[in-house]
Image (tube, rainbow, N blue to C red; front, side):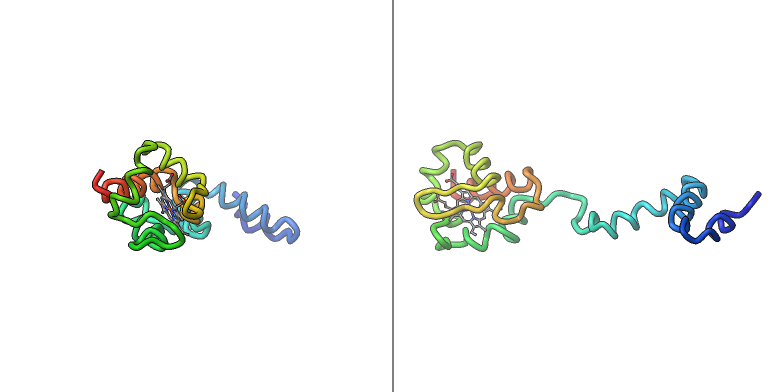
Length: 135
Ligand code: HEC
């Protein structure tokens, strides 16, 4: 059998050839290459488990929602600020947090300016903030 290296001696096809050789080397190598590719693509940047509500709050939302609230944001733990908002229904609050919302007091940016977070992570943060308002 000819070694894959022989094919790769043909310069212009070098990369293609290398890829074909790699493919030909079998599943074991492909399986090994997988995590490395993911890491290189930045997929491994985040822990596999989704962030919890409190984690998202502390990493993102706290910038504006920490008491007393920045730029008109309802502060964490304030029943007074949150009650009229919660009256709209938690689903509405979640959709406002996901898509962004301009209200009477300011601008809630889409996902708190963290579009890389999943909808579930943002929803957890909203639920956490609602809980903290004592509702
Ligand atoms: C850059 C500042 C900023 C960040 C960061 C931010 N918010 Fe807000 N948020 C606001 C402001 C300002 C409002 C009030 C908007 C209004 O009602 O006028 C608001 C309102 C809200 C509301 C109430 C919406 C409604 O319908 O009354 C929710 C829920 C909310 N934010 C969730 C979050 C979550 C969850 C995060 C973190 C992922 C977050 N926010 C991050 C500024 C921010």
